[in-house]
Every structure is written in C-alpha cells, then in structure tokens.
Length: 199
Image 1: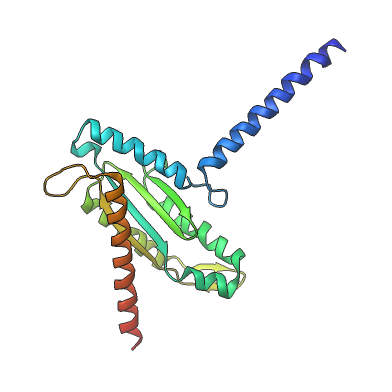
Image 2: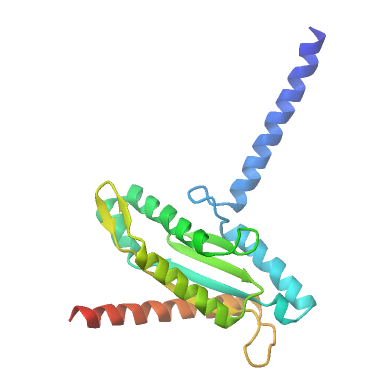
C-alpha cells in the first residue's frame, strides 16, 4: 500500500509535465500542419537577426520568403474547409520537400493560407532560386482528394536581412514589409499573366 501511495504522485507529476510540454508546443506550433506558428516563427527570426546584428557577415545573412496560395478562399467556398485543410497540409509537404533539413530552413504557417520561410545563410539570388523551385514544384504536382483535382498556384515574395549593395542590416520590420510587398507584386503579376492567357 505504501508503494502505491508513492507511485500515484509520480504518475500525476509525469502527466502534468506531459501536459505542460503539449501546451508549450501548442503555443509555438500550428496544430493542422505541425509547422511553427507566427509566434514560433518570430522567435526564430529574432534569433537570426541577433546573430547578424552581432556579426554582420555574409554567412549570417538570411532570406525571408512570404507566401500565400492564390485563390484559396475560392477553394474553401466551393469545396468546404475540410478540403481546404487538406490543401494546406499538401502545400506544407511540397514546401518541406524542397527545402534543406528542418533544422536549417524553417517553414512557418502565419495563419490561413499565409506561410513564411526563413532561409539562413542565404543571399537574395538564392532566395529567388528557392522561390522558382517552389512554384515549379507546385505546378508539377496536382492536388487530388475524393475525386477533386486542383491545380494550385502560390505567390512568393523574397527579402534579405542585408541590403544587396551596402550590406547594411535591415530592421526586422523592414525585412517583413519588403517580403510582403514582393509577394503582392508577384500575385499581381501572376493574375495579369493568367488573364492575358485566358483572352
């Protein structure tokens, strides 16, 4: 009886520790895709920015890619959120499959169909190469579930932490603003191209 008395508190403590770990992960990870969420991504960004601020060199430069799925709200409206969720999981697999191992390149789900990729030790030119790879991979891989086949497209904006010419370190807010602006420019260019092809 004495043994059981001592075992119960330990099992309870283990359960509480496991619950704490789960809640900690939930605070930094997206439950649908398993990716870091915005909060977790912000922590990674702050870490890389701190490294670059301490030692402004090419090795510490990093690129930020902001992405979203084109016309995703139409997929939700037409096929429902269950299919929309499966599209997001599929898109996640495409992104993770292209990038270097998960401890190096980081994929973040910001919310909805908005994603962010953080590429350490990456120039603007290499960021543009990754952008092209993502677009090509998505075009080459059709999404299909329950008889529904969809061709997915994404808009991607690239920005680096250091300015290309002077190599000065940008503030995080400026990096994110540039990546977001570039993404919307890419989206506008993609819509214009598709509209011209449909005429």
